[in-house]
Image (cartoon, rainbow, N blue to C red):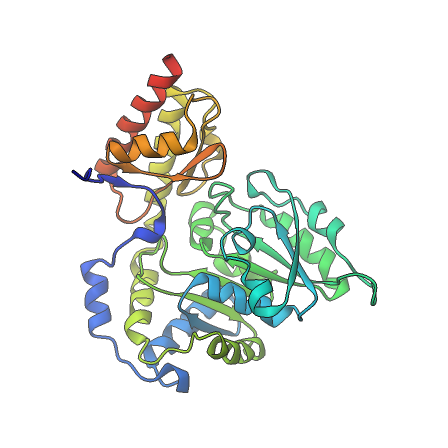
Length: 352
């Protein structure tokens, strides 16, 4: 008998379109997007570009494609981009930069994914001629997924920008969850995006759309990215049905992200009391809770399996952590249930 999942915290990609979102999708005006004739797609692209303070935007099927298009734009084959070792572009995009674009990568270590400007600036390879690989791009992730939903300090981002600009090195922001950083800090989206040549944002995580991301940048960059989107197999036809979900999400689901943040923090406080040392609630800034299993007596696989058996899903995130992610489909009742299960399991091993 399959256990009924009562609190699915595996990822915020699990959100399902709300009835109102489905209605918006059903009534969307559409056209052929490859020919630039889908009015709903164009409206979404213009809306997101405006919010982020960039000239143009392009709708993509996924955040990974948006990121990979940005890498292809900024880094020539045989050159490198650099990012932290926990970044999504190197941990969760299956080596696409090397496979699709002939790009190499180097990384720096970033505890909890947080940006220390000295790390990327010390790693830059500049003026090396034909002897070493040249750095063309720095990638920053905000909020940081595997870091635990952490928000990058905006002054750290600006410091990296100041250090890269004299060398002509570009910057890309993987802003899949930039909406969360905006809501948690009150800092405008355009201010977060201002230091970067390109920014990708996701619509299908906390915002609840079923599909899609948007890549923004200069009109010239996005024009070139459209060519590569087609080459990568991302040209879409009547995509307005999908873009309508994104527009609905922007209108109705951004500010409510604060609810996810509150629920994640509530769970963090309870878990810290049940198993001291498993999490510092002060580090839970947005919708992601990373539980360290080291002080709990569980392995990540064991804890994830026990949670599933009890109707709560989490993600074993490496050798010593379980990730729990709050989203549109996890309400107060589901959160309360998850807290009861988590504290019971954590306390059981902590006492034994």
